[in-house]
Structure formats: structure tokens, C-alpha cells
Image 1: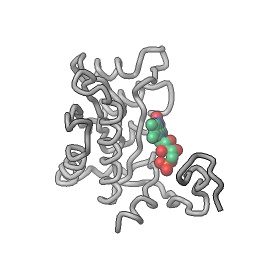
Image 2 (image 1 turned 45 degrees about the horizontal axis):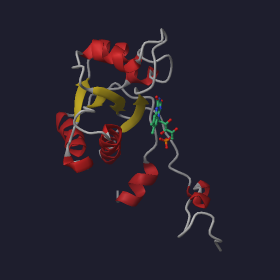
Image 3 (image 1 turned 90 degrees about the vertical axis):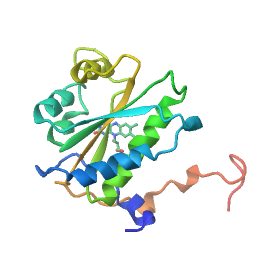
Length: 179
Ligand SMILES: Cc1cc2nc3c(=O)[nH]c(=O)nc-3n(C[C@H](O)[C@H](O)[C@H](O)COP(=O)(O)O)c2cc1C
């Protein structure tokens, strides 16, 4: 698939089969993450790869709602970064996460971004803190998100070209008269 089609094809997948992801594909996913651009090339991100079912279940409960799908994923890639290494760690980590998602699509895998930063457990504990505890993550790292990955067990339509909001693209000046 060429990149133009891949971009159109990628949709958030929230149901996965039981099939494990091949080791080489896991390496390919992380290769994409490690090649992502970062501010001043600081590469402040780090990743925890979780495929243990019991841990996936626990991770799925670190949000009041919105993280349930993690329980059924083959793998959760927990994306972290060190704010002391990069003042724009959110951007750095976001780009790495998206690279993983695009690489997943190219490998025929489904993925979904599960937000961690600024989110809370049902008990009001920051999701970031709950995940630190579960995975033994050092205090100097912050968790941005988890990328759920696995073989797709649901079909999604590709992006609809007819619904693209071209009016949000401004030529030359905001509000410039456009033909
Ligand atoms: C910053 C961000 C946070 C997101 N958080 C969640 C989440 O916590 N749970 C979830 O199921 N999907 C989450 N998503 C996925 C979005 O819901 C999804 O990308 C959006 O609905 C567009 O659908 P698409 O990815 O199929 O194009 C998140 C996406 C982004 C970019």
C-alpha cells in the first residue's frame, strides 16, 4: 500500500483477535518509534511493551472509561518521555506514538491511541500515577499514552474523502477570500 492509501486506511481499532504479534513485527513497530523525529534530536522517549494478559487487564482499568480496549489487545505500548530531557516531550512522544500507529497499519495490524496524560482512574488518581505503580516506571518519566496493537477483529471504513474539512485550510492569510 502506498503512503497516501495507508493514511486513508488507518482508523482506530478497538477490537482485536487473540493472535499474538510476531516478534519481527514488534521490532518493526519499535524501529518506527525510535526513528521518529524529536526536538533537538533529544529522543527523550522510552517505551514499555506489555503483552501479559493480566497486566493488560490492569492497564485497561487505569481510566474511568476509554481504556477498556487495552484488555483485549495483543500488546499495549506504553509511551513515556522525560520532561527534563525535552521541554516539548508531549510533542516528541506524540510523534513516536503516531509513527507506531502508521507502522502498525502498514503491517496489517490495528491500533488505537489511549490517552493517559491528564486522565484519571475511577477513583480520581492520575492515570499516569497508576501506570507508574503498575509498571515500576521511574518518577522522572511521564506517560503520554498507551498504543493498543493487535490483529483487527472489527472492520472500519477508510477515511471519507468527501468529509474532509478543507475550509480549515487557509491560503496565505486566515480569512483571505478564497475561490
Ligand atoms: C490525543 C488522542 C487521545 C485519544 N484518546 C483515546 C482514548 O483514550 N480512548 C480511545 O478509545 N480512543 C482514543 N483516541 C482515538 C480517537 O478517538 C480517534 O483517533 C478519533 O475518534 C478518530 O478516529 P480514527 O482514529 O478512526 O480516524 C485518541 C486519539 C488521540 C489523537
